[in-house]
Length: 341
Image (cartoon, rainbow, N blue to C red; front, side, top):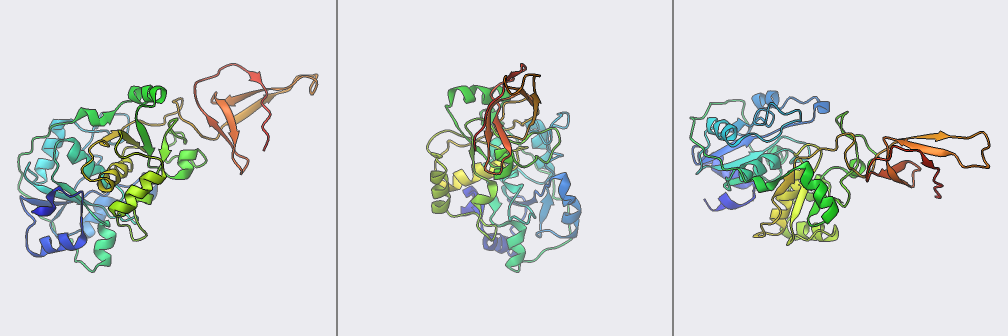
């Protein structure tokens, strides 16, 4: 099967495979849909209503570290092996993943990356997802039969996962390029994060490439040339080490997929950072409350100011909102800073 090693397969390729009854032990299709709670979408219920014939549902939240305080942290190798084995996947199975996002692709690259992380290279993303599958007139079904279990042996490549401490060290050394896949507003700190305990902004030195920029208007991945140009315009060198980050380890995987597609054969961009912008961590950007203390002899003596949470280096966007580079905590009052627009 020539397409096994490709990061992307077309809807036509998969439709032919379904029509020729190739779905089985050597080819499995997974609906990997996952959505933020605020969307109020139930991917399991949607799967039960319609899915690509022969598909099984891959639950990102179930195939995760259920004891972690954070959402869908990576499972152990044993957990992953058991989970995908129950889906009828063996080490010789070509896995095709898709999701039902209106973007064309949203969570599927996360599962594509997970398989690669656990040593399984025979995995592809359905280009354009369910959105384009339906647009092309391909069939869907509500019928489902549980595949026969197969044995799968996972081997975790720990070097692909970076810790909070790794991020802090890289902020100092600037040895590795970091690409943030979230929206420009969240990256700049002028839009709220979906989770209340996470602040907007970004790691110092990170480059913003929203995951939607890797797809065209139809939701299909840009071609090799388009992706290569996109990275070049962003100042990202695909021949140098690259980390990807986002809010919860889902859309960051679009960066890895795009880098793989934009520079075939280059294997230097496989690390995704499962690190979060929790309150009090080192992120640039964000909206903060400014407290001013005016002395009795004002304006003879300048007021003092304090930002909450404590920050350094205030800047002002054209809109007039204050955005700050959080380099370290400053718990003391300091002289007022005059900001000229």
